[in-house]
Each structure stands twice: as structure tokens, then as C-alpha cells.
Image (cartoon, rainbow, N blue to C red; front, top):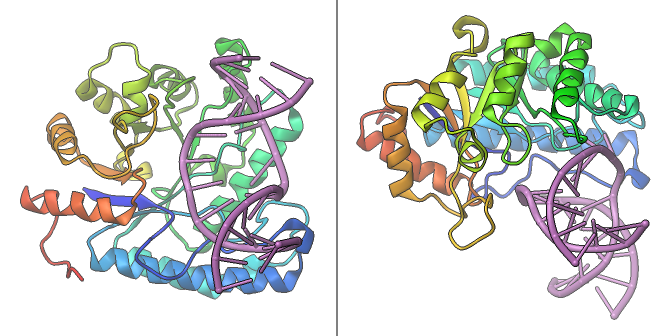
Length: 303
DNA sequence: TCATGTCAAGGCGTC
DNA sequence: GACGCCTTGACATGA
């Protein structure tokens, strides 16, 4: 089992998502930003290796305006060596990598323009994984999209769009159950239609389900991942922030709930992304618990 | 230097 | 129809 956290490391004094305003776009600024972002990403990954955090979600902002028509700088060729070196490190350390394009990526939108921009964003993020020469176990994680008043039609539109995606995107795309609109059951229907694996989010499942117990839900999601092609189930882990709106993520790991979830997990192998506000701080606590349970190696040095 | 408003992009729910 | 929320950091401007 690998443990990870998304995008930002609060212990390191750099950012991997430096950007600028569209109005101040220039090729030079792209070049400067990407160089800095990739250097920071390397530092974050080294921190992660030192702390036995072997699952990481790379920020969507590595390349400012990466899928926007304004960006015509040939960053793919200019930074090819840097991406390849990162990929070599990732493979050597057996890290698992994902991207999570944000809410603007909506494959089932009725608007052809929105779908086109969404596909462009997936192509951009997938191409970074390709440049790192990572296999198809490195994933692009999205939600099913909007409801538009008709769940059936919305799911059918996702399926129709899926068939039009470039193969490079299809190979990496996974769909996550969300907390308000599309449940695990809806995602299973997408899986049955097109074979897309389901990235399982335990907290979203708690918010929106059809009575499936957690143990069963985990196994249903895991069965959608083809071991050789996709790797083990990726999942997002979080829990409710006490006293806050339903669906609000906790600000730091609740250890009792985490231990209870590990019991639900049983012997199922997963890679777990902690979607918790304090990032690597909670992830380090999770690793300490797993180490205590003998589920991760003791070799990592803690600093 | 610091505080604050704003940033490419969508959609839902509330009022 | 307007606005807040998701979830969030960092830019950019003005004091």
C-alpha cells in the first residue's frame, strides 16, 4: 500500500504551481514558471521518498495555461529532458502518480466547446505523464460531470464522449464517485459501458450511496481495475470535518476513523491519497500508523 | 512590505 | 438572476 497527498507540500519552501495572469502571458514567463515548477516537483518527490510517501498527485498547474490556446510555447520539447528525468526518478523509486483535472473538465457537458476544452486539458495533463514515460498505471482522475436535470442522458453523454477520446487519454482516465451527483453505482454503470476504472472516494461514498457497506463498495471499485494495465485501486481518503457542513473535509487526520477504515479495507491492496487539509503532516501520521501495523517498510528516514 | 481582491475554465443549490 | 460554494494557492495591485 502506498500513501500520498495531493499537489502541495507545506514543509518545503517552494511551489510546483507557480503561474501568472493570462493578461501578462509571455513565452518567457512560461519558460521560467515551468522550470521552477519542475525543480520544485523534484524536491517534493524527494521529500516523499524520504518519508515513505509513495503516492502523489501532481498539480494541474505545472505548465501555466497548459491547454489554453494562448500558450504556444513548445514546452513539451523544451523540457523533455526534465520530464524524462522526473519519470526516471519516479520509476526508480516506484512512486505512483496521478493528476486530478479540476471542475472545469466536464466530459458530459451539453456544450461542445466545454467538452473540447475538457479534452484539451486531459490531453495536456496526460502528455506530461507520457513525457515522463510512465505506464498506464499513472492516472487522470475526473468526476462524471453535471446532471443537467436528467441522470440517464448525462451518463449517456459521458459514454458518447468517452468513445471520442484519444487513446492516450483513455488509457489513463479514471472516474471518481462524487459526494452529490454521481455515486459509486453511477460510476459502475460507466465502467460497464466503457471499461473505465473507478477511483474510489470513501468520504464521497459516505455522503452519497445506495446502502452499499464500505467493505463491499471498496471491492466493487477494486474489481474495475485491471491489475496489469491499471495497477491496484487508487482511492481518495478523507473524513467529515466535525461540526461543519456535510461533505467538508477534515483539517487533519482523525486517527481513530483512519484505523477503523483500515479494518474495512482488510487485505485489499490500494494506493491511498489523503485529501486532508494539512497535506503531508497527516500523510506522515498515516504512514506511522501503517508502520506500526507492519503495512509499510520501516526503512524511510524521518526528518 | 503587507493586505486584499482577483484569477481561464463549470455546475449546483439557495435565496 | 445573483451569489456562495466546491477548494485553493498565488498573482498583482494599491496602500
